Length: 276
Image (cartoon, rainbow, N blue to C red):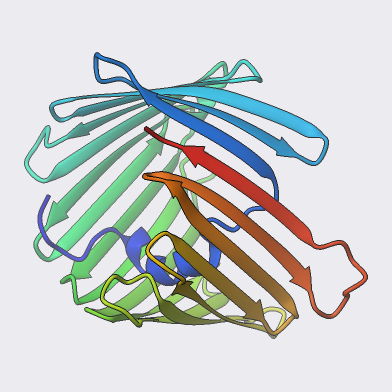
């Protein structure tokens, strides 16, 4: 793929990941293995509240083709086929879920040195068509995305954004919810390995005149352990500790507290991902 601005979904992604990624409120165990034929098998069990679910997934890569199949305890079968470079600098992704055929989607991504395009179409009658375009460079990007409902002949959503990226920082502004919400974020990396960082995000919803300000960060305790923390102006405090128990295998513990209602039971989650 070409070195360009990336897809629209990449705008503000670094700040979103630091504030949200790996924060969990349930119990999860996943075990991955690899067969002699190159198939990666992953078994996952999740307990949320009093409900337990699970799934088994298989991934196989052959040249420029990637096949993913997942079967869960609800008798759902999800399949994803990813094809790279059918045409130069393109990626094609086809997904289908059984027995819910209407959830299928076909997506085509195109990457250029100064642009990235993506279009996705639902595989059902009167589908929703998603379009996105980003222009610029890896340092500066501006883009927009929209969803069009062919059945109703109207735009379901439209979003615009801009980002400025430097080796140790990234700033982004996104106007979403059909112009009702504006979000600005900034992340600054504090070490060469990019494991220690600080982030700030402010969101304003014009219809309700509501502002949400969130600050957070990550800190590399050592080569195997990372701690994360986040706090918003509504009093929600989140904390996370992630440790590499053995190479490639992670233990994650996280919790969320309401500092304005300490009598409430905090949310707690733990996840263990074992990989060979």
